Image (cartoon, helix red, strand yellow):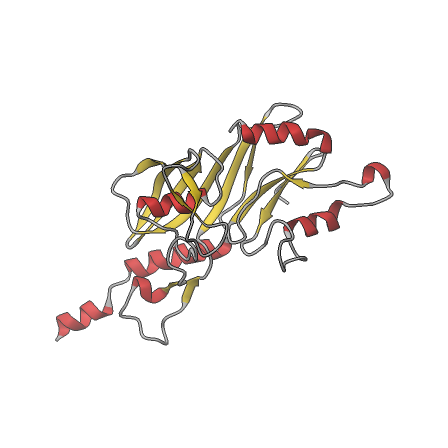
Length: 253
């Protein structure tokens, strides 16, 4: 729990957690856990029925806003629909963008030949979609980005970053599913020295900013960058700073 009041609670969702029961996944979802925490059937006002104000993909970590007071459902939904909620993500992507900031303005719609029914693509007859991005750090073959979606389409950030030419690391739908490894940074490493640095989608919902639905006061909800991403970034930085032994052997010979 990142924040809690009578009306709202903000949850720090881990990567790999599904939002709602779906298909074969009936237990262990975020909504299952919220019901276990708040439902008290037969206890009047003590029985809280939580509702997710928005969703994150299973493989995306970060802040999720949950409504506890059903009387505020419509107000919170309107805030998201009117794009009054500012969402900020961070992502590790392949390659290095030409500029330090930019925007992708490209309509999105279902991918006709996609591997799943949820797969999206850029298409002329799609829904208007816009995403801003800014470079936080350039890390050799990768870039650490701050990303802000201005619309709320399915997989919007993932599709737009692929369209930009910089898909997110370990994205099984829109990029290279292979995990990030130490040898990706330094090919001179032996098999014994190699290791997986990150084996999940490198996308994190870092911050939500909105007006509180009751008081209208500004509310900023922030999820710290999770430990697995922090470790992966630190390891990449260290490997990039270290001298390449392959180059050293070439000079010595």
